[in-house]
Image (cartoon, rainbow, N blue to C red; front, top):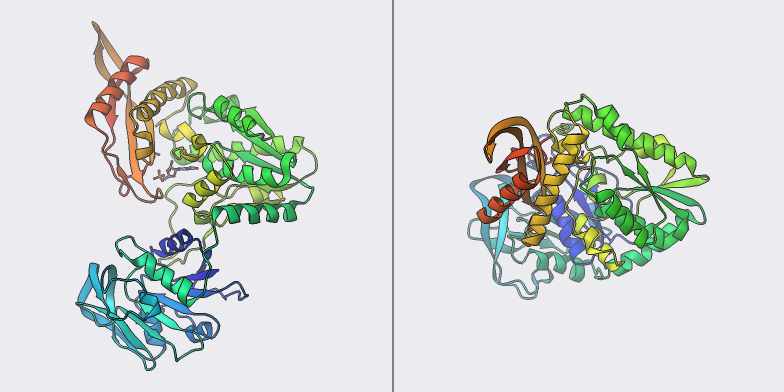
Length: 509
Ligand code: XMP
């Protein structure tokens, strides 16, 4: 495997994903954490960082010690840090280089540059520049503006040390993937054998070894992660996996029945629990978004625990935790603020005192889908839009009542079916309807109406961290507006949300 030491760059996860896409396993570690050395570590990558290497308190690591064991590649800050710690000089540059640049090199023999065009588009994001390379290092590429775009040393340590001033992990560095591949395959000697099939086989063996003939209980949500995780555990231990699927009354129209049915078809041992009344009861009169989330999170745990205690001899809790949830990121600006509390992360394990089985703990979302495909999970699960744990509760602004939920479920069904019919569903990352707490005047036939407004939301995104509103065709929006107002009693106005994230968020609460 490859270790990526994170110095706090916003692009660190992209490095990891690029490497995984090359079918090579890698893990992200906080830069200052001690490295756990073993035979599987084949190379180290030092990430970018919001720091300047000349800042007081800029994080630093012992690159010489690393290169005594494996090859090291520094990216941006990582490259500058390398230059600095070996005695070179890094300074604020007079020409700031952000965005597109062209890397020139004339070196066909250089392993890092195999198959890279002699002039190749790269993406820069730095205000410091390496102004003097340390002894024992040679420059292997430059750009029009800066002399050091790439460098290496084969003499200062047992293994090669290389540096790239730009970001090979972003798609705008057109041959970045090939550069990474060169480092990983030709310099570190990695085999590109980390495939979904290999992952599935290895994971099933691991689960068997961990769980043996003991029992696992797990909550299913209908989402991709919990479904893929459950199927992997199911493949490993069969009917010793007990699944619980809770109806909190806040799911999409017919979702509970349909999903429960699909789970049964997959051969999962699953119990559906109808807890609607409990949720509606406790949510009565509550309008504050964070309070709603807390109530739903707490009730979910209570229901799940109660169901779990009905089962005997359970030793493990299965969870669909994925890698972005567990990466310890380097906190550069102090602890990050809670914008919204996501109740599905954490919560269960501390309270339940059981071992954890988390087969997807090291996978990114797109890898979960690839694994799901490998083990034959239906596209109905794999292609599904994300849906928040608190469900429609955070799409009904203000107080939640069963009547409002029913109204929103109808509107949502018209919208989602409409997106599928128009073949737009797979073109957007997430879509849904929001019931606004305002009533407005309308006219239907000869009658004055005074009814609710529904907002339609559809966004494009890669990971939900940033998003843009989807530019859906006007004809489609017109049809949705008509269909919703005609079919859903209680709604007389439809609006389309054209806010991006940031500054808005995807959900309204
Ligand atoms: P926001 O609204 O923060 O949403 O832009 C980003 C993504 O997270 C989902 N989301 C949640 N998922 N529990 C969840 O499981 C939650 O409390 C929650 N809040 C937001 C949201 O649907 C979007 O995909």
